Image (cartoon, rainbow, N blue to C red; front, side):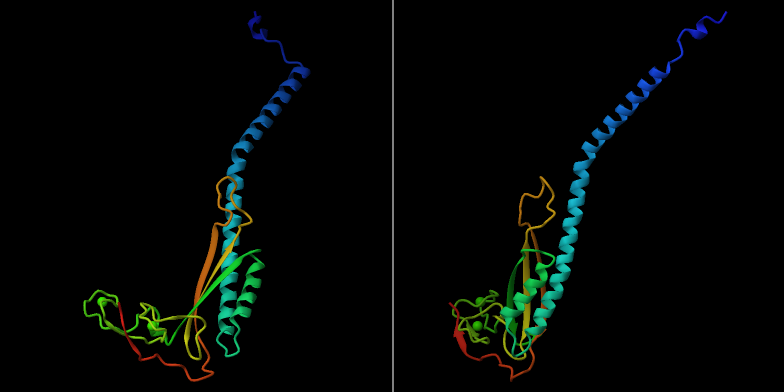
Length: 210
Ligand SMILES: [Ca+2]
Ligand SMILES: [Ca+2]
């Protein structure tokens, strides 16, 4: 006898349809739950990638703009203010609202970069002090641990041109990026002014350090 074989009655079409709907609803719920878990991570990654991409593009554009500004600043007719404004305009195309801070420091030659003015370091302290005699080579009336002078220099001078761009990123990562102005891009380049006149030489006046 086969009575046990038919203990469970066959499903009707209506029951099968209801079961399918339940499965679909369950799957939909699972997808929504998974999306809710994954979406924040995905969005954070996406914003992070866009943020880094904007930074990389901004750095590349800034480098090019600084190079052009530095090159035009080597001429006798150079106007550093105009050059900086042009650079800011170019950088602003990829970093809207960016504020550029520029600094120029001039030297007689490349070998003078970061060099201190000559002095008699009798106590071997590494600085000019204790009535030691120094040579005021850059003519500013004091001993300098860095012989460079602020500004674009004169004919034939070597100039370090440093630019810092500060901007508010468009793609700050939500809930992580608390500082609205957190990204700073900086670059430095060296140039030598055109020999449009005789280069000034370093001075030979002496002074006494305190
Ligand atoms: Ca000393
Ligand atoms: Ca000096």
